[in-house]
Structure formats: C-alpha cells, structure tokens
Length: 146
Image (cartoon, rainbow, N blue to C red; front, side):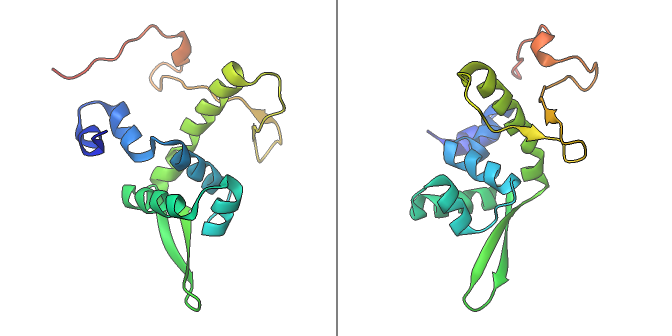
C-alpha cells in the first residue's frame, strides 16, 4: 500500500487512515486517551512486540497525534502524550466503539465512555454540525473532487 499516495490524495478518509489506519495505532491512541503515556504501559496493555510498538509510536509522533516528552534523563525515558490532533481523534474512537458495541457486541460486558461530571454513560453519535442531525439519519453520499 502506498501510504504517501494515500496521505496526499484528494480523499479525506484515506488521508486520515494514512495517519492512524492500523489496529495497533488506534489502540495506542485509545490507551493514550485513558492516560497511559509510557512505553511499558502500552506494551503491557496491548501485548504488542516492542519493535512494532516502537515503530507505531514513532509514526504517531511524526504524524503529530502524539508528542514525545522526556521525563527522565538518567536513565533516559520518554513518554507519549496526545496532541490536539490526538485529542480530536477521541470522538472518532467513541463512534467506532458505539458501532462495535452495536454490531459486534454479542451481549458481553464492554468498555464504555462515562461522563466525568455526572458518572452517566455516554452514547456517542456523529452529527452534522450545520443541522445537528445524526449522520446515520441523513441521506448522503461522498463527492470526490473532479
């Protein structure tokens, strides 16, 4: 797959996928949104091989969704925190989670978003900012530039 072509093409979906389009990258961002920031935390949570994790963290940092920060000089240790672009990806993961819960939930107890102020569960829905109407209820199609 030519990720350079995808990341510079005319389709916004392919541009987004070029940054975070693999499972490991999305799960790293999920864990970062849960407050994890250190290599070993990601590795333990995901059960991912260190070389794969290193590559994904580097790619996410280069893409601008994570920022690498040094938190210890001796020994040298870095942490990875969400940038604004990374924080803006959280609602996308929330929508993916709702879709997965609906179509692949199988009645199991699953992770969920909870409102920090009320403690109530959040049900993510994607809306059209102009109308406030859920996209799932809006007739639409994708238009590619000529």
